[in-house]
Image (cartoon, rainbow, N blue to C red; front, side, top):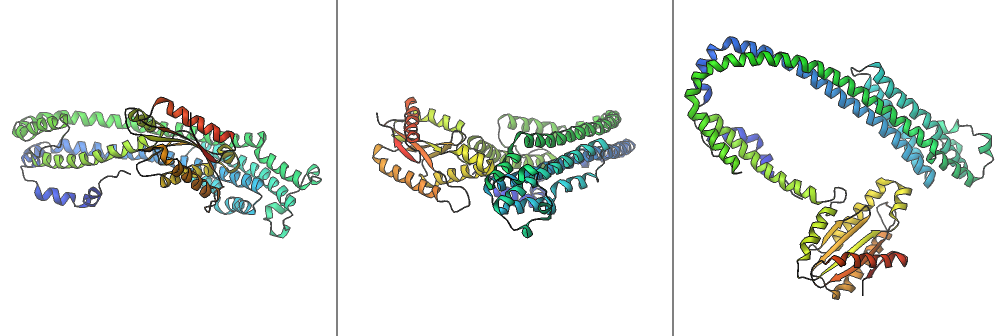
Length: 467
């Protein structure tokens, strides 16, 4: 991974001393003392206007910060509600009591939803805005009744000890129709309650209330910002009038500093056009500016490298993304070296997402990407080219490496089928094709056909394309 040079951060605190010690030159402020005395009255006016502008600007910032905090509160309500949904669904699907415990910990201890509403009372917002978030919380609480009822069905179906259940669970009274259900029917009924259309509608209503809350906050914030901006505009107009008068006083001073300012500026412009470091010339302030610019120039160069890295790599897995992979294909078309190309699918990945959730799915993709990177050579290229589809380009590889590749595939599947990190077991299906020279157009199709053969024959393995 590309990084900004570390020495920039370590020397930041010493930058002032370092620059002040090595810069020599006439300071513009020294030759401006006479003008400052003549313009004292005008500066008093400017200071007053600046103070007023600062006050209004502070109010503008406060309005923005209130919006950010309110947005955070909306997120807390959503996160709390989504977490409860996640835990109850995991519980009714896996029947593991730890998810029920996590559910009631969030509901009764962590209390993110209630915490958001308590924090909102401290902000300067309208009653209408507060009511939207209150309704979101009320709807979420109504939904918890349905969720607790579903968990109660599970506890009855599993025969849990009543004494060990949370108080909310003990107070649930089953409907007559549900009392006569068998254990499996109770489990099915519980799962239906937290996955059916009515449950999703209730979740959408919570999201809608938080959206209305955010819309109301935006409107309130814009009104405050518009009011502050109007006052700021009037203050800036007065400042402009003072600047016009000061400009007249500065005319004489301009002649004195022309060689210390105008000429260095021209030099700096030429340096910027040529995209090189600034020369250290001119008055003290300009020399200081040049040194500061040069420091920023170095940081920007490092950041450019960092941005290039981000553009070429998948943000989730850290391997090469589809765009960089396609560029590599184009480059390798002109290569004369042999290579092997592998297309890799995570078997039944959609089922994993449906059963365990997208968060677990993302962790599995990260795990697969890391294992691929660890398994193949440093000179090989691992890329994520689709949702659960990966590719590997093995450079300088001939058909003689077929046994080696097959061993790698078997080793990877053995590792992934017996996880020790709490993730569900998975396997990979891999189609492999060889090229004697570069990356021809048909190589991708050949590997894809080989992958199809693996899937047709039960997945979890590899197949080598052979005409």
